[in-house]
Each structure stands twice: as structure tokens, then as C-alpha cells.
Amino acid sequence: MLRYSALPREARDSFLFRGQRDRDWKLQSTLDRQFAALSPSERQMKLDRLLNEFADELYGLEAASVIADSERLELLGRHHGLPTTVLDWSRSPYVAAYFAFEGAVPPPTGEVAVWVFDRRQLSKASVAGKVLINDMALIGDNVRALQQRGVFLRLPVGTDGEIALADGLAKYTVPYSERPLALRELDAMLITAKSLFRDRDAAARTAIIRESLP
Image 1 (tube, rainbow, N blue to C red):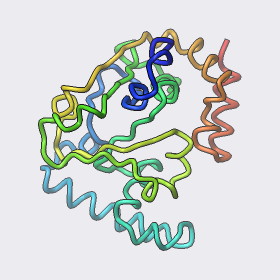
Image 2 (image 1 turned 135 degrees about the horizontal axis):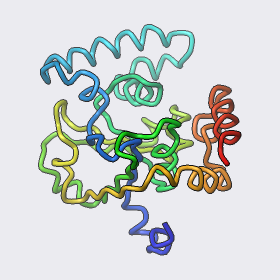
Image 3 (image 1 turned 60 degrees about the horizontal axis):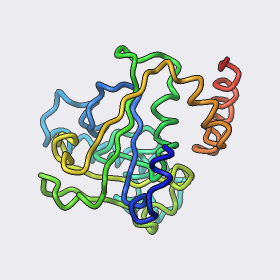
């Protein structure tokens, strides 16, 4: 991380980071992961139905302008557990590290992963239809995305992100045994569930994690 911090501003701004709880997890959307048994066209129909149901349930909870905008709706859904076509990334390697280490159950491989993508290489991605979403007009209503310095990358349904983004992609693995030290360091930097999610459930998660660390 010190090496990253020493990079020039232009270089730092080009990198996106994504933490995953197991080094063997594929770089794929939650829609593709959860509905792998369906064909790509069936997955797309599943997404449309999920977004319609999500929109119906948001009335009274969210601004009508967000509910009526399918793109903003999908980004909001991604941060609240809805299976979608977008991968969420962070501009911060430390936020990505938090998501890699947060889980209390050790991964089967014993290692977590942090993916790094150089957005300058996006034009070389070997797939049509990829979209990097960092427009504040779309993200500005999403408090969690703002807290997590989030951006989104949409890939067509059924796309293997590791192949599609290969030119600008790197993966770093870290032993899960480093979790206590990593989370204590991140807590000292105010990177906790509470700061990243900003709700009472996250405050409780922060208390549980902090109390469990040696």
C-alpha cells in the first residue's frame, strides 16, 4: 500500500480496487454467480423482474426520480444485495481490503483477494458493451457508494471479467490469517462497517468485529 500511496496523482486515480473473500472467486457479477444455471437471456429476464420488484418495494423509501431511472435503480440495488450485472469497485485499496477481510468465516482456500484494475486499459477490454459508471449524477443518491468511494463496471451478462479485463487487471492474494491485523489497522483509519454503510446494522457489525479481534 505504501507503494500505491507513493504513486503520482494521475496514476493513483487510474486504479480501481475490489476485495473478495476468497481468492478462487471468479470476477463476475452477482447475477451471473447466483443464476449460473440460467442462459444469458434468461438471466437478463431475471434481472428485469428483480428490478421491477425492487422498484415496487422502494416506493415510500426512495425518491421517485431514483425509482424511475433503471440505471440508478440497478446501482442502488447492487449496494443493497440485489443480484445485478454490475461489479462494484472502490477508488481506495483500503476499502477493498476491508471487504476482502470482513467475513468471520475463513475461506476454503485460506486466502482472500484484492483485484486491481487500471481503468486506462478499459478500451482494450476484449468485449463489447462494457461500461464504467462513475457519473455522480447516477451515484450521488447512493450513500453507500459515496462512503465507499465506489464506481461500477457493467459487463454484458455471462461475461468472464477476468478474461474481458485481462489487459489492465491484477490480483493480489493475502492469507486470511492476516485478518486481525488488517482489520485493526483499517479500524484505526476509520474504515469500518459503520463508516462504509452508515446505518445501525453496520454500527452493530462494527462493534461485533472490534470486540472479536485479539
